[in-house]
Image (cartoon, rainbow, N blue to C red):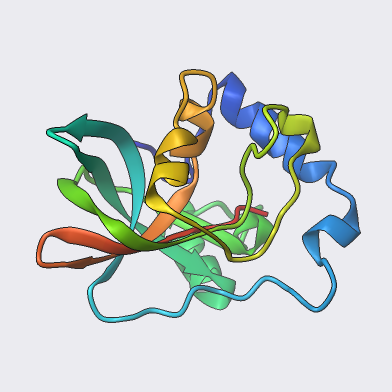
Length: 175
């Protein structure tokens, strides 16, 4: 089970270090600014624990989580942490994963996939945020290399499931 306020390993720490040193213009490029992912019917927020190809189909093993932003994050933080010295969620978001809730879904070959931040060049130090960059399912699966798998699994994803298949996947940017 992942802890509340996900605690990470060295690759996760590296990812946070890379994000923290991004130039401001990379984060707020042009008129594209971060916007929370709007909730929709059939959408759930998850961590991806495994990507597996079976019989020409791709399956994602996911663990459902609760994702909070803004004042809702502060309320969830106070409820779970009860720390008199820290009363607001750091960085404006808060993740709750009180219990494992595993599901395996097929990734639809034509799934609508939107990424925010990933290793496009093979060098994480060159990574920049590109808001809602649309990629196809094979490109998404290719990001889960042995070197990058743990980092990619460290991001929350908002998935929409229809008839047992993920038809939409949006990577949640972590500030």
